[in-house]
Length: 62
Image (tube, rainbow, N blue to C red; front, side, top):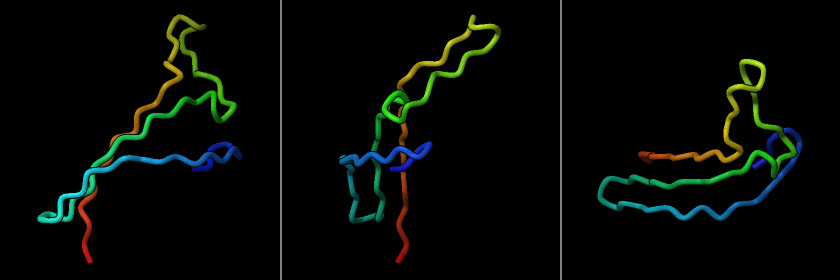
């Protein structure tokens, strides 16, 4: 994965359902791994977590 010019490799465990051709998984990232800072709002009163969870649920057609 490449974000902000920084490239990282991840192994993502998935669950594959052969009956529905469904692939589910979750990838957990830390934005500091990509040399990014957490966004802040309202003069720093609201701070966003450094951790990002990406959940996916794909239905494959072929």
